[in-house]
Image 1 (cartoon, rainbow, N blue to C red):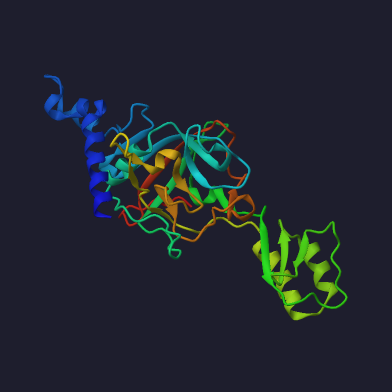
Image 2: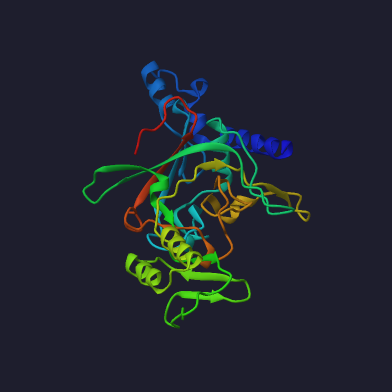
Length: 314
């Protein structure tokens, strides 16, 4: 943990010192004759932390801004944000930037790095600084819209749901065309997809067996889409050493920037156990009713959740 923090701090210093934008805004290097008013204005401008100018540091407001685009409106999700040309098929937004610039920006606004998810010897959910993430974009009329990022993510319906059931009640037969299945080996009733009220009521009429009815009610309840309630945390990803070159490699460069499924490589993750074991088991999907068209520019605003001036966006 200490080694990771030191490496991250070294990374932050390197990014900040090498930033042309920061050097230009340095009062010591301001051109002679610049007015105090101009200097103040420059100091308040967000500073680019990467050459693409897609990761901007608003230090006076302790805010990190990410310039992204919508790449997915519908489908199951592994993440909210990925690097460009990596996992756009499972991410709502993508950004052209090194992952290290985002990590450095989070450190700069005061976020404390945590620990990524661990799967062995036993599961441990990711931990770290809780973050507020707000999405800002313009609608088709050109009006600015703001929404907390959780609103763009909802519980997945395109997945399997299971319930323990020792046996099928007498008289119950399952139509092969139905999404309902019974696994005799594991003693489980299985349902796939979102269950409608009509389907629920039809199954409930088939038997008065309490265990069977409880399973059907469970399927109906769990398969209804709900906005994600989990919080975002600065898990921090991790670093590896290339034994051939001696260079340090940041795991999140693989594309795992802001995740909704737990990855040990994630910079930002959710603070719950969220499956990443395949499409049929992913917990979240894109909330298509909320997301603007593909290609829409979206600014991600990241602040510390315990900051005094919390974002009041509903």
